[in-house]
Image (tube, rainbow, N blue to C red; front, side, top):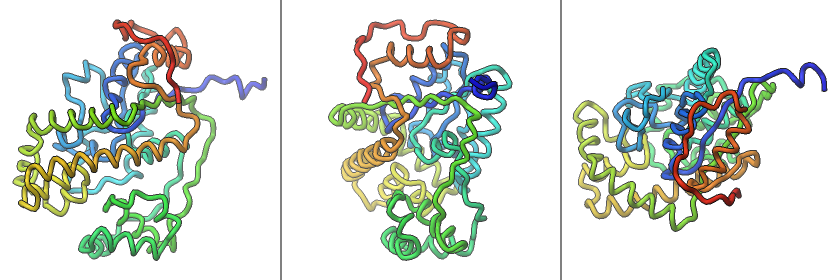
Length: 324
């Protein structure tokens, strides 16, 4: 081996997967054992006061582990992936300088890809006039506009995400099309990606129970408070999923039963889209959440014995691996 190939590289652990699979809890446990800090990769948890609607981890659940990229900006503002990537790269550097392990945890595939593959993002500044104009369009019209401008980008975007559609139209309008993402892989980091997956029936059950718990905990009251404090119905809809349907409910466009039923289905569809995105990356090592011993072993081999601090999985688990 050459001297270059044997040079020690800083490590990054990634915990990813669809919603409701237990990513946050696993990240905390692994951070406890392997001297880590958690960096959220969730496109909505960057916003302040969007807590119950996004399923944001609580201070109690953090168990004293530092968490980054939560509550970064007002929900009235738009926070781009370029901003997230820039701030996250600085945080990763700071965590490494402390001799700790950065653990990126979340379900926003594009955010994770931007770090794992060192994606170069197009430098197109926000166009407030265009955004205001586009904001008056329906979701269907935005889809048609992007498809006409850039069919390639339309084919791989989340077509139900208004904010991403508008950003893609903005870029395509400015430079002709949304350029294919370029990766600048310099081999700076060693990266292990752990994916959590559940059978469809179990995941749907978890989504159902989790939604009930969030509604009972005050998710509707949270939305009322957000609106009273200046978050418009339009912006709430742009934030997607829970907040879109909460806006519909509070404007009496849906009954509470319709709100719950339709939102549950929409979250399920979102989870399926997340899996479609993640399955493109063959480097991800997949486990069901109950295979904690296997996950622990995988991360232990990746990190090396010197980083281990305390046992993290004291309970009995199955020993067989269920990687996909």
